[in-house]
Length: 138
Image 1 (cartoon, helix red, strand yellow):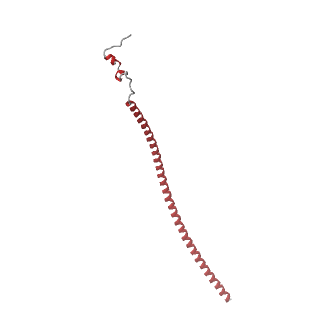
Image 2 (cartoon, rainbow, N blue to C red):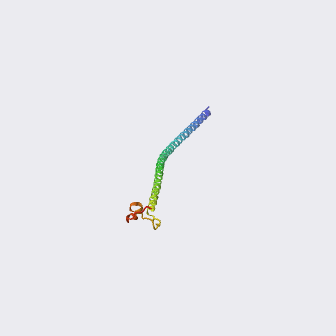
Image 3 (cartoon, rainbow, N blue to C red):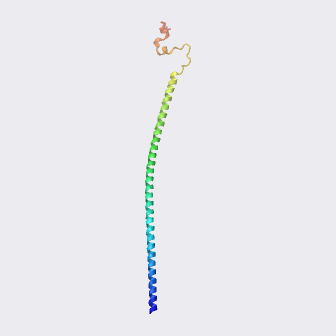
């Protein structure tokens, strides 16, 4: 029986050694997995933080874009209004110039017998009346 006891002891010793090796491997793997999970969590937090920062920047840029678009629309409306005012002023200026040209245009060559404008406007002051000779009825 002695050889069997020794073999049983050897087997038990071998089993204990294998068991302790398996426990160490399991503990090492568990610690390794735990460290990996911590790294993954940290990486996930960094990504979430970057995503939140990026969203904040995108929202800020969208607001700036909306403000710029509103300002551009306002400028377009103002430009259109100013262009219509310019066109109105051009029309008014052309009317004023046309009137001034008509007013200051040289009168057409007058006929030798034509009366000056002074007499045409005031028939009582015609040259014949002023000279004292009245037209005679026939």
